[in-house]
Image 1 (cartoon, rainbow, N blue to C red):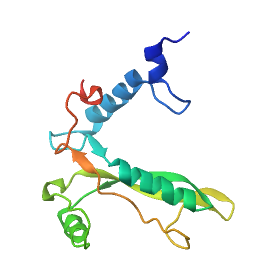
Image 2 (cartoon, helix red, strand yellow):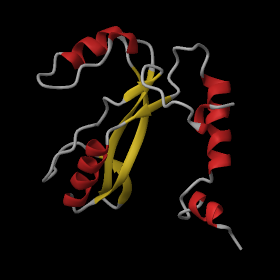
Image 3 (cartoon, rainbow, N blue to C red):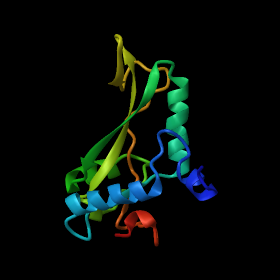
Length: 145
């Protein structure tokens, strides 16, 4: 029988217990983080996550989100920062990794198909999270080796 602490660490069948999540993050850092400037995590505000979930709920054929790994370049940052009203991406994000959320749906009998057009409530790819380093959580067990 699980104690209360173990119960909190395993909340659903898709959850990852904290000790395993820590090991996964450590393995990523070992294999992919070469310098102190390499991306270790990306933070997104609750409002953005809720907006993504709401957009998916409104789209009748939506079945999920695909996460793509990407990398900023100086040129891409310049182009993104030219979008009126958008949050500015720091110039020091150049050559750093990020993630991009893309909505998926069943299309022509194929589930999990990326889609960007022909939607009642368009959801273009989402990004602009805050990178660590720059904005790292203090004392997070996910960043401690």
